[in-house]
Image (cartoon, rainbow, N blue to C red; front, side, top):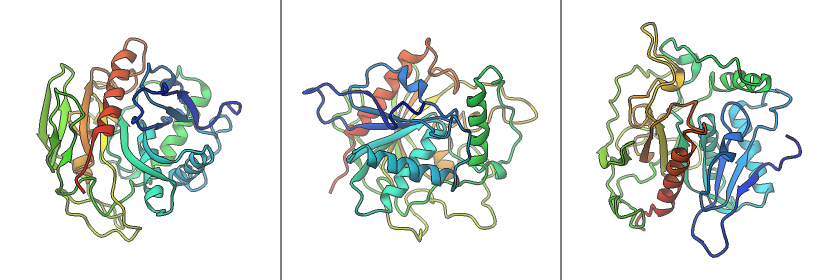
Length: 327
């Protein structure tokens, strides 16, 4: 993979068309490659992807996931990207995108700003060392050897890593306006609410319910402060920053049926929650749009699903472009 640019621009916005569409950087999943993103149809904007440079060597990342994020931010800057960007990714890629966003927020002189985050079936993260239930992972023995090694390293990265903290919500108590989102959608989203589109195309504005589902998310002995529901945030000693709003592509199917001894697959722990645990865990105002997808976590980029997945991702990106906050 050394001969592939990193980041690599895999889609180009046509000159004169949708000139206001923000470029997006999509980060690899736990497998380390960006092959899935090459399956997508036109998203009508510049699309950059970042793969794991250590994929071929299987070398661990110094500094863990945060060290990986710092390296990827340097790659983005070295590629000459600047101004507002949408950051996102599938699964692990969503976590890395959030870590990069935090680094950008910590640098008031950064030439890059974050216009939004797109999480592609990325559930709220609980450090694996603190995970409260037994999970049974699907058989992935048919994957290439290097991909299997990358997935093993992914588990190591997430064993103790915690999500970054923020000192304010994306919108706080402000109304999020989205007049260009489309006639089927509301023109604004009040605080404490999000827009959800079902697999049948039904669009509703729903209230964030931090108590759903009921799970034990007890903090560790020395936890990083978590965001508190309803816009009341604990003090964070890091540089003050506001988290950009996010769209979530949410698969509705489980990849493994729930087993009586545990929760099924790790990625399905929050599967019944429309927000995949983000409000429960402490990011109550983060997700402003949820698009349900009739797929499971591991088949959403399969040939039979890629049309629907492309449509959902494009819709999510367009929504992030449309979000506006009052001055």
